[in-house]
Length: 86
Image (cartoon, rainbow, N blue to C red; front, side):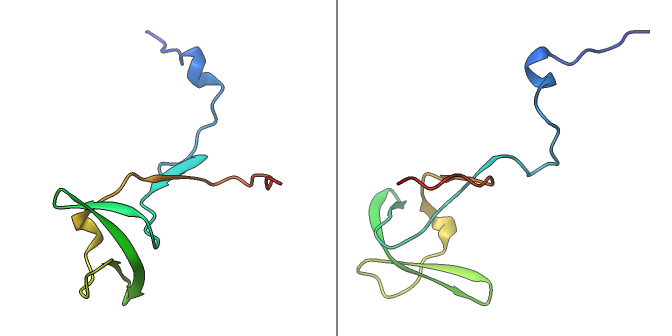
């Protein structure tokens, strides 16, 4: 009977449930953010949340855009408290 060993680099890391970690990545839409839509660069004017749907409005456009149509590098967030920088 063979016994498997845990590699040394993962033995020190705590086991966390799936989806939980010290950091996570999420698209952050806010006024002034540059996004790509259909191959061209656009700027976010404002964002609204209605009936649990996120609507992103672009500069120069009256109609909202579905975030699925936009490309944006995800922002890294931390789930740990960090001291404020002064």
